[in-house]
Image (cartoon, helix red, strand yellow):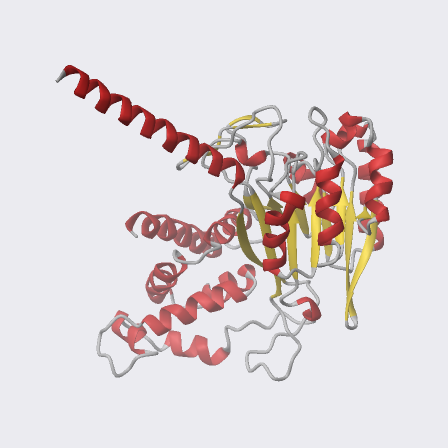
Length: 414
């Protein structure tokens, strides 16, 4: 009987160990593709739907023979360009081969733009590696910029060296010069370090791609990353999309490991960003925007409809008059679409013109739909940043506070 009990315990222990081993293997080797759609009011219309695949922090890691698993994932996304934000090699377990295996294949999928990380610097071998990258068609940006053209439009993409190369002042000077020359162009920056977001924002960069943080190595529920280089414990910038004034930054959790060999709740990641323009010039769009005006989708007729709604049921029935008092999902959805596709400053300003007795109802309808949006955190950060602006009226600030409070309430409820 005792032997039987011991055998059962042994079997359970073996099963647990196998399960843990499978889990840890998956956490280090099973690639996920994170996707974001980011909209900008200064993006040329020709770049609507332009797809950027972001790869970072490979650290000489192999994903199958000739990187076939990773290459397959890249092909799946069908990107217009691929950006690589450093640490492709690892200074301790240096292996250029797995990197050139990858880049020689993905340069055939889309143009590849590359910047350095600290491990390229620490390896003391980047000069020779850089030449190999160029030989296979990788566009290496070392305090430099290129233009990307689509039809009659262009945007600028710049890249700066990692501070570990010891020339950060030169890098920032060159970035400043690039931005001055291209102040009228939509700008993308590739830079390894996400903790420098305030510097990127001060230089008026529109969109930044970074890595370095490894997702915080271990990701904790409701907290995020545990630790990252140069940010320490519970780092702020580890994964996803961040806003600093008019600068948007995308941080990849990366693919490989360095000092800490294991990821937990933090699988290797590639990131697909699809660009969108808030404004359009096409006459085929009935909700037309013009880049040279502040015209918004909040039309006079829409405002008139709202102002004529004197009760909660009136608001409901604006879009579903046949459903007496029922939840007007169509109206709420329309509000949500307008909010996401309009400059937030314009939306808040227009909302402040509506009779105050209706604002609470409109915010209720808006936020009950908005909480389901994939990019809800981005809009929250935009609202928080906007709230600190001195140009807002008290009523506009109050509306922002109401929206943020309502979002938090319904996020908890739903």
